[in-house]
Image (cartoon, rainbow, N blue to C red; front, side):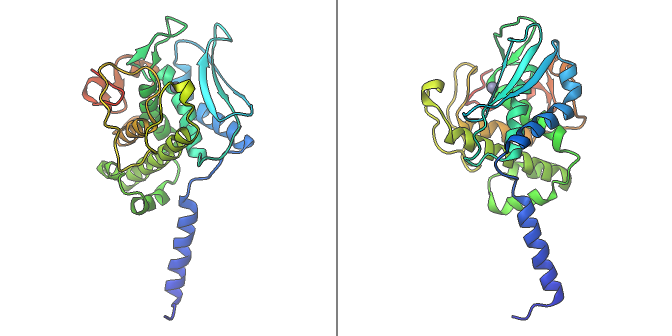
Length: 272
Ligand SMILES: [Zn+2]
């Protein structure tokens, strides 16, 4: 076959797209700090509208990357990211989603669970996930060029829910969030600590499957990686017209998708 100049240009353009469409992998120490600062900056108006001041810190340690919210710096809250272990497929986007999840515990609204401070509604794990995918990641990625992520429609069947978006730009943003979710939930799967979680991780999460479990009461703890992926996909496909929202939006029972009562969250963690 003889390649014309047009052919070669097309091949060159496609290989560039292929390279850039793969999410940046394995957050380095510098990337971890940059990513935390990036998320905190982009979510500044939400963080400042919380009922208590929060400090976001990074404490490097030997272990896997993770996060927690605690009151050791009373009266401020401390959102602390720990660990340093790279690998297991965690991308920088996936790591940003993890930071968003921690903010989601404080800003996500109901359903909530008891927390050390009575004046701070603390969202359950599933709701923190929903906030990460429907509010936080759309806010931090919306002004970036996400169009390369459209390529994943071919390699990752099962993210069809993103096609419900009205513009190509919105579809691309949704796909980027879905891919971050896949990276993060596979990291959870690979690093699952059954003794700590008191349960097994189930199957490796994929877009093609759904967690079929139906809870009889809203789960306060961590859902399985597949259940979390289901929640992230639902959040990514939400309609978000005016982001970022403020804390009072959630406190009043609204999310970026509209009234909370109208959103059917995955039954693997949510119960009416
Ligand atoms: Zn959590």
